[in-house]
Image 1 (tube, one colour):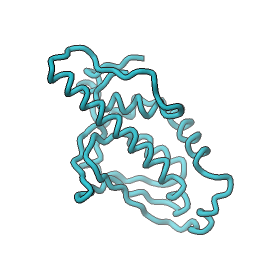
Image 2 (cartoon, one colour):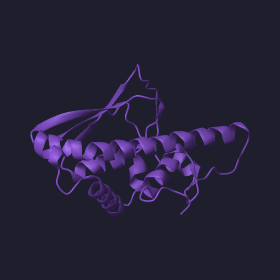
Image 3 (cartoon, helix red, strand yellow):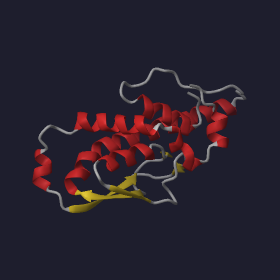
Length: 177
């Protein structure tokens, strides 16, 4: 399907990007990621136990924030709760974080073993999606700066198992797919 950058930058409100994702596909994709990542026997989970704990998500480099629905879905699948810092964790917005100026984006709460089970998958997905969105926005901005009036679009060449994340990142960054 083709979704144009005009739609993504002008018609879709920043908080509406998640509406682009088919819920059943999102849940199935997240389940597959977790099945791939969590071993049959979670020895680490046995060691840390199931006491309720909190973890914080910080952004430590500048970029377009993207991938919130994936992060949410990972922790939802593990019965954890994500509370976002709504003033800064806005899908499609630039976040000016640095290694010296970390910005708190969210707090995740749940059983400590579940937090650890979802941590790597959620962080990798959020990082990849934000990176794609950031580079997409830069490409769109460069194209506009030289007077390009056509679409800046991605190809179908995506990472296996990560297509939905990369295509979503393109859209959040303002490119077509």
